[in-house]
Amino acid sequence: MNRGTACPYGELHIYEIAGRPPAFAEPQAEGFLGGWCEEDACFFFFSAPAAGEMAEFLSRHPGLRLRDTHRMAYADWQGGPPEPFRVGRFRFLPPWHEAEGAGPGEDPPLLLDPGLVFGNGRHPTTRDCLKALEAAARESPPGRVLDLGTGTGVLALAAASLGGRVLAVDANVLAARTARRNVRLNGLEHRVLVVAGRAEDFAGTAADLALANLNGGVLLGLLADSAWRRTPRWVLSGLLRGEVREVRRRLGLAGYLVEEAWVHEGLWHTLLARRAQERPLPEEAPCRS
Image 1 (cartoon, rainbow, N blue to C red):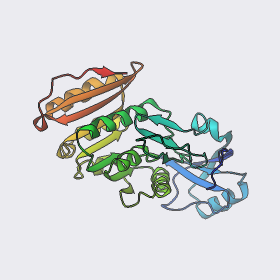
Image 2: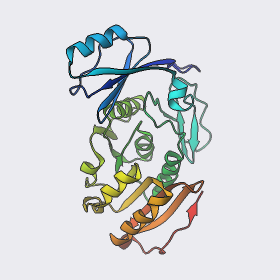
Image 3: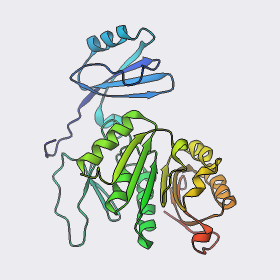
Image 4: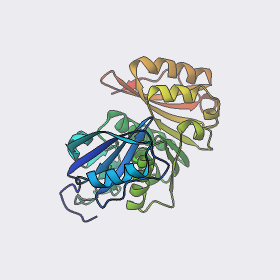
């Protein structure tokens, strides 16, 4: 992708399909950007109208039907155009932007193309997870890292830039593809492996640090099993005010203590927790905004 200042994504043409196509079945069109499937619906994205291509695709899969079509600007889909952002020591840059020179002692920026996946650095839980990752790395390098719900790969890239060896997981196939592309953009294939799968199925993977920026329901389900306790340190995020108390309770029952906590506008909560026998800690850590 050529470096410049213009985002390569313009208008999106979205075809909403009722039903789920077979694995790896996609429309064949030059302007096809990707598909986002969830439960009983799938959304196919194109950079130009593709009514003919979609009609041909549906004819090959008679169990599917066109439910609706949508047209919107890429910036509206993403909540704004992708822009450079910085959190602590981490700098992220869309690959089509010109990079500014790194200052003394600064790390070079990480390239991030969010594509159609949510994870462009705008959400407060993403930023607080980066703060928590930096805090966790102050004591020791991250070592083996598990990133559950990787999305665009933001946290996986940051952990790899600190020297971590990362297994990044996302249940959404398009998200996994997007994360892999960002890993390649940064030449970090030797440090990050991206797989498509459910967070619950990978929670017991051997790791020194696990990152989980997921919705509260998924996190509570993950904590209901014992597999996650094999990892000594966790960054847990995506928690709303009404969910964080129960997560703290379950951490305590499992022998974990919260080292640090971040809260955004009283709504979104992020926790950095450690198994208690790893190091004595006070019972409650203050929240940061």
